[in-house]
Image (cartoon, rainbow, N blue to C red):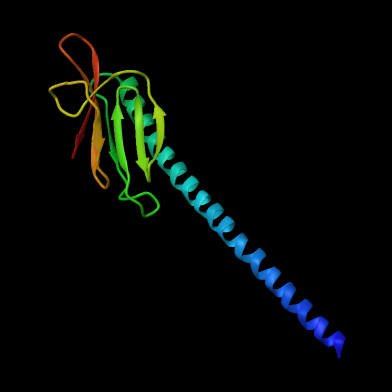
Length: 146
């Protein structure tokens, strides 16, 4: 009878030990899954920034009068984001992380007034990105919503 009691105590001890090990692994697994999700979000944001920067560079190298229409997505992996373009590149912010892609330095404007500025691109909008030459012969990138 003593052997049965010892087996029961050992079984309870092993069961408690397994519960402790499994419960300590759950937060680690959850953290790894969150990291993978954030990496995916940032990768998608970086790809969007690359696409914006590539389009800006194509328009700039196309010369005066060249334009391309760019469609902004509604969301990134069902999350909200912010996209901006300035004279050095395109930046997409999602959940506190920033995906960026640099462009050749040039002047950016959101209107025909040609004021060098940061342009915010709104989600779900279509934009015309065009190359405009000013009166001094400098090329500008003008980004306007359609």
